[in-house]
Image (tube, rainbow, N blue to C red; front, top):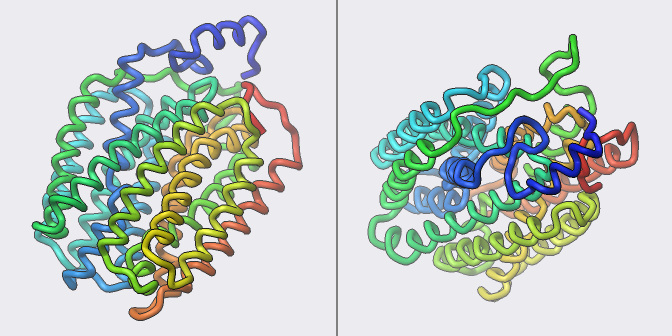
Length: 404
């Protein structure tokens, strides 16, 4: 899958379309609808900390249960994305998108009347439906010439949608209706997701394979996915405990909710910056800068800081989390130019998001959750070591111009 000079020129001319690297280009309308399908799949991530925090306030979850519920939903999402990526052909995408959106809405509505083990089961079911929707969008991004650009577009628009929902929940819905109001709003968003699913493309072109080559990624591709999982799990471990961290800094739940939606504003800027810098900055530089920023932010979380400092630190974390996320894809393509590992990048990110809260639930207590800060730092540095090893070892033959 080596790009010829003629093909490269075609890519440059039609870069406003998608599928330049693999398969025919899609129209702008199809691309926008596919991005919207992915937005529907990840809406919950923007409000998960306040929804789970509200469930804990209503005594429907324990402190450890926050991490466990987040783990189950993200784990189901990641496993679902991985399995459909391996076993489903990219066909009948409209039907799959509509069905998954309706199923997701059903799980969100059922969560309103749940508690205990039933709540965990319903959130796992929701995660499975969300993973199917995400697979549709990841399939488009992995086939593009500059995946970090389209991933940046996806993350920026996704964050705008999450911001709108977070503000509505924090200002109008949750103060009046609590956690159930939040899940009702999620169900409404899922039902709206049927519209872009109907407008999405019907199928994608299959990824090319050499004769006799299997569908699994090569060893370096698997290592890149492991690096993604470890690195992403660091922020997942810390971010899900945003509200308890704020409360143990002497702040209240309103500060945590404000920190969440201001972080989403910053995440929008981070996605826009990643889109603008696609193809112009090396992914390893982004990893180094982001790691340093997160370590400083997590140190701030450990202090009894004023509300504005806590909110500002969380906004900085949000900006760099989304700025980094699109560069996970070119890192994976750098390790595996066949792009088979890139098709699983979304699943690895979700599994990392699930692993983080799972590990975090082992190091927190009802009165002290600061252990997640040490856990996050350790995981992030471990993931960075693996990324560095991939960056500076092995063959660097790449089929498309991705930044390193």
